[in-house]
Length: 322
Image (cartoon, rainbow, N blue to C red; front, side):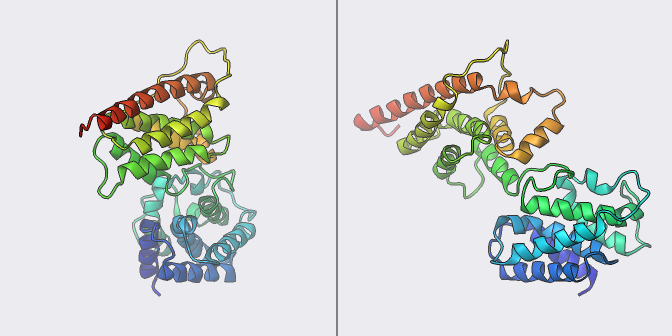
C-alpha cells in the first residue's frame, strides 16, 4: 500500500480511536506492528513507528484481544534497537512532541519520505530521522498505551481525558453536548471518586465538587443523583476531615468547568506531571490539594447538595412539579 494511503488509514484510526473492537483497525495495527517487528532498527523503522504512534490512542482505548501485546513488543524492539545509536544532535523532536502535535504526524511522515516536499518543521529532517528520535517516538507511543511508562517524554493526559473535560465543560456551561445523559454523567463522576486510588482521589474530589455546584442548582431534579454525590463525598471526607496545615491561605478554585478540568488533570499521574511542568503562575499542588482546603470544600458541597435534595423532596411531597 502506498505511503499516502497508509498515512490516511492511520490518521483515520487516530481520529476515530474510540471505535472499540474495530476489526479493520486491529488488522491495520497488527500489519504495522509486524512490519516494525521484522526490522526494528531498519531504514523504514520511522515509518512503522510513527504509524503505531498515530494509532496508539486506539490501542489505549479498546482494541481487540492480542493487539496491544504485539504493538508493544514491536515498539519496545524499535526502542531497544535505536535508542543508543550514536548521533551528534543536541536535541531531538520527540522531546517537544506534545499531544496536540499528533495531528501533524501524517503530513510529517509524507515529508520525511519525500525530500522534494516542502519541509517547514522546527527541526530538520535529519533530526526527525535520527535513530534516537525514532526511539523516542516509540517511547511516546508506549507511554500513550501505558501512561507513565516512559520518563523522558513530554507528559500528556491519558487517552479519553480531554474528551471527558470537553463533555463536562459543555455540561457545566449549561450547553451539554448532544446525546449527553446529564444524570449519568454526574453519577459517573461520583463513582470515579469512590473508586479512586489515594494519589488520584484529590483530583477526583475536585471534579465532584465542580459537578456538585451544578447538581445543587435547578438543572438536576433527580434526587438519586444527589444521593450518589452525597454518598461519594461522605465516603471521601474522612480522608481529609482531621487534617491540619500551616498555609496562610488556599488558592481559590476557578469556575466549575475550570475546576472539573483541573480535577481531571490532577486525577492521573501524567496529568499531575503536566501541571507541575507548566506550573508558572499556578498554585503549588501542596496548597491547591491541601487536605484542609479539600475538607472545607467537601463540607460546603455536602451542605448545598443536602439542601437541594430536601427542596426536591419537599416539592414532591407537596405535589409540585418545580
